[in-house]
Length: 245
Figure 1: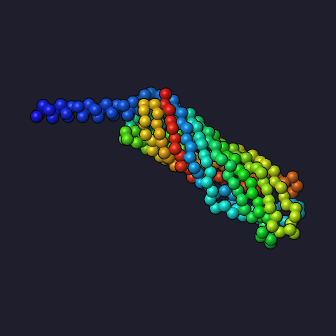
Figure 2: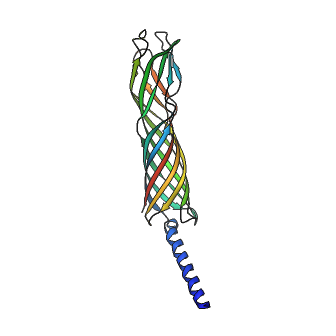
Figure 3: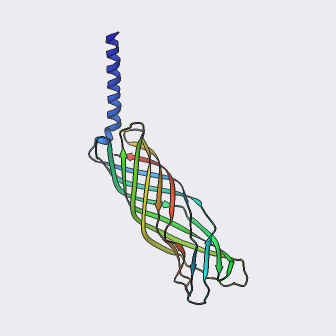
């Protein structure tokens, strides 16, 4: 009986050691390359209330967005290098590109004291290019919690501005041109990932991102710049697949 207990205890110890070494194998390597593809839904509050003052004629234009929140799709790919910081913590540093489906901006246009002159709408196409970092705690072999961040450039393209006139007294309205902006962008996130094999990982995480400023171009007459916003914030729920090699 005593010998049997020793045999069982030795077996369990060896299996635990083997499982630990298998789970940590990718951690103790000096350097690893990592490719991560992620995607999922995101939520944003597009547009902002603003007033534009043309130089001529003397008519202030009031833009009030109607959409309080809307959902879009996002996708990203990241190329990183992974290095062990300790036996239980390792980090990744690399570059990534994120894209999103067009954000729809709609609202009501007012001129001077007339509050409902027309309905307006346009789309914003956002892209982010970032330097990405990730800090992963590998002490638990079931799942690995992580924190992530990124800084870089946001590229937005505002396009297809249209109006539907509600007040026939204003039959000539500004038509704003398509315009692209390149500004500062960043992201922060957290989540969990799991080793499926020695080379493949699945993850689920949340990311908050600022895609940068977006504005329509001028109307070619009295306004040099159309409506827009200094920030495009998103709350993202991302499913990721990573390959380590």
